[in-house]
Image (cartoon, rainbow, N blue to C red; front, side, top):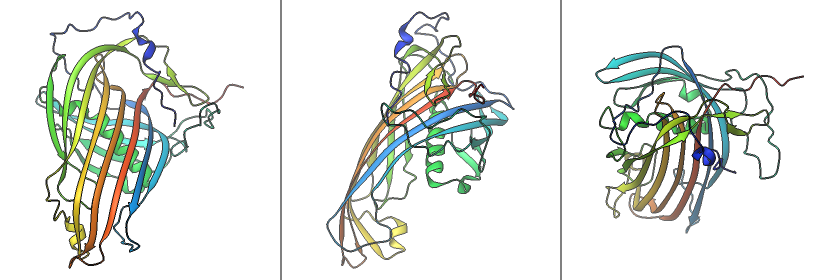
Length: 325
């Protein structure tokens, strides 16, 4: 999938608005109101390769996979609850039309995306982002396809990044660290992510707009300034490599031994005017070397797993309407 890497390259041109000074602190939380709607384009490309050193098959074993998907997600703000210098947000998310799951177009080929009235289609998901930045009271997620669920979670992680900043107001040069458990099921127990974030600089930025052919290009609106945050994450294993068995595997009378590691790099652009995430990109890689066997140590299967993914989240201006005739 061809990434929109050139979307922000020409933003070094002249800018009408002025950015805050380097020493000025500003809130990076989004400025929202009930009834507000936002539209995001999410693109994700991932691959997982699995090498097996045994012919024994296990139901909970990792499997190879490759995805190349994109989706338009519309978010409606339902309610805001102040909590000190932060707030909790109740919102509804819904994918638009049937554009989710459309493979990204190969280079040189025209996109199959056709301009049409973009209206919600499929099952809505309602959720709350707490004042601590945690997703709570989620309903409707089970009604989405596994691919949609993954894309929705990826969008949520990017959108809620400002809630993880320890101080309510930040300035260029600020650094902070967050540790979070890995929520996905894995043959290796006690995995967590250590995320080091850095407010690098301010840059000119703009939301994107979607053309009638599905291309994300610059909007024609006024130029804005964005805070640029860089996050480097490391996957940390707290279980012993000699016995890394998660509870789910113990219930199936299985034992696991091995190691897992990974690293992610995320660049997030947050509007200094609206606090909205205008763009976020993530490059991730993970490796796992694990032996899964019966509890008595018999019938062991050795798996070597390598996974990579590229993610892009873009805030869109008004979505395109029906084609002109």
